[in-house]
Length: 239
View 1 (cartoon, rainbow, N blue to C red):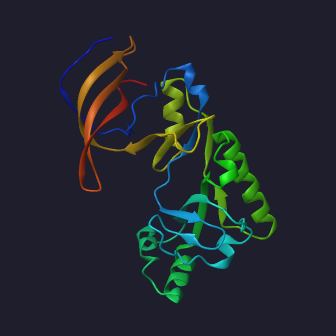
View 2 (view 1 turned 180 degrees about the vertical axis):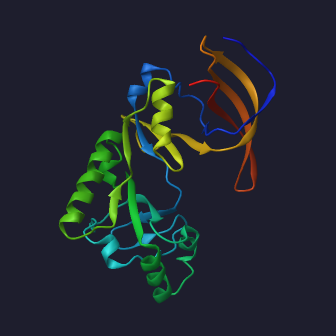
View 3 (view 1 turned 60 degrees about the vertical axis):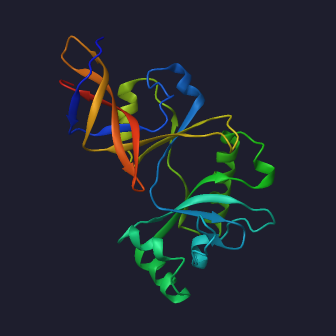
């Protein structure tokens, strides 16, 4: 192992970890569940309406929410995604008229991916139990003809080797989210986002006799126009 302090330009897919307390080579990762990070519009189902993060009505068509729980206290969180067209148009749903919003839902073939159940009786349950409840919700909705609601894609336990981590990351569009299997809703999740290029300052490199190296680096990115420093992990050299 060697420590270096220089700048590199990474042109390979890099994995950005905004919470660097997950070691991709640790067996303790078996305590985490990996799900896909999705970049759509945050949606909250309260049993009556599908609401945006700030409370605006997303004007969901009936077949998008058909069969979802409607009891008092229902609180289910998901990500509204566009399976066709331009996902940026989903951000205008709150401001659009009802007719225009319904047309957008139709044109974009919107889907709802559930990832959290905050209904009062579920908030004291483990994440594993809350995830199971979402699968039951989707199963019941499908029985009633809903083909537009799913549970967020899952990948089982977090990887315990760099190679498995990279295989898992390659199956996603945006990245991964790791949640402890016994975590309450208030516990922070670990998020890793895919990046294709960037300038990074190398912090450490572990190289093999074959010539391949695993690199840990610090990278500056901009999120919502704010400058942020994150940790990245990537491989260079021979496979």
